[in-house]
Image 1 (cartoon, helix red, strand yellow):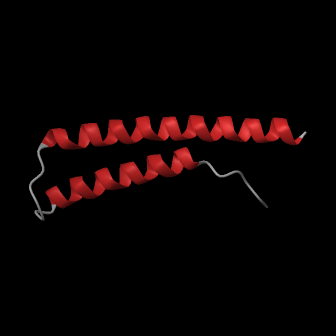
Image 2: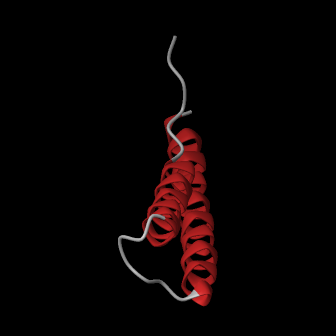
Length: 68
């Protein structure tokens, strides 16, 4: 079964995984990260994911409109 690809969800997942790696690296003692670093990382990643999702949806709608 085939399903649609949602690049915005991919970008959101990657941004949250990067934030988790930064947080767990700090918690594990691998490096010292200030507490405020993760907030812009998560917010920026979610904003980027929203923009990517909006562009992907616009492209998907345009392709369906011109194909039919």
